[in-house]
Image (cartoon, rainbow, N blue to C red):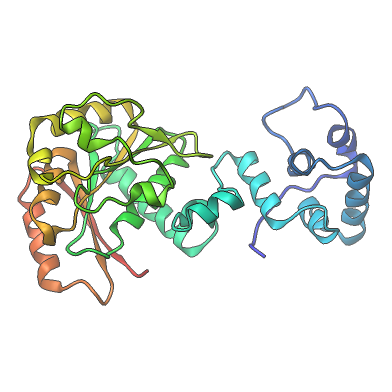
Amino acid sequence: MAKYRDSAMPAADHATATGEPSAATVHDRAIGEIIRDTRHLTHDQVERILAYQREKGVRFGEAAIALGFASADDVLYALSQQFHYPYAAEEQRKLSPELAVLNQPFSVQAEAFRAIRSQLMMRVFDDSEPRRALAVVSPDPRDGKTYFCANLGCALAQLGGRTLVVDADLRGPRQHEVFHLENRAGLSGILAGRAESKVIQQVRGVPSLFVLPVGITPPNPLELVERPAFGLLMRELTSKFDHVVVDTPAAVYGSDAAVIAARCGAALVVARKHASRVGALQDLVAGLSESPAKLAGVIVNEH
């Protein structure tokens, strides 16, 4: 069972837990209240949980699990509601298994993404500087770049600001698969000058997270991102979203990633442990260092 913390629901809170919500603070609800409403617990079931809680000296959530009235998922969901951070429901976790930050919010991977997020908030998304989009680039395919972009987007969205993940990998797009979204329209159509609706899609269960998929994979990806329209689009998106993270093709496929990074204004390099070649990584970092993009750092992906 995942480790968690929850607020105990003492007997003194019984009236609030089993009757109408208190006028005190509707938004600051106890864990027990949220579990009760989620599982539609009866008055008798709540009484039994409270009695078990007093007898064993445990938290309300632990007592509810022990008695079979709630699951660990129910407690994690209640915590997410109380502390206002997104947590994927079981059905969504099956559809999007790569989203570690949403699926396993207390895992080592999720904590690693939060640590990276903290660094990026100081280096790239600092309010004291002009807004930039962050291009995530890697030397080779299968370095984990798409996985990294998706989870970084989730971590940024958990701060509450509007976050957009842009799939600019016009050669092998995959963000729509990771987030389980439609891919009939997207970035390629915008850059080709087609009028398309609903190109930016909200991620279910995460109100502040959005994705702009590629749409139809074009035959001329480099030409599309080199057009002035891509730079104009990035400026417009950074004015409308608090954080913009951009997935790119691997550098081995050409100069797409370098061009995209220059238009975004900032770049982060992702390499894969025991897989990325040192020479290719050095060449990529050197090339980005000479471009208009601000190099935010290099991440070594172990997964």
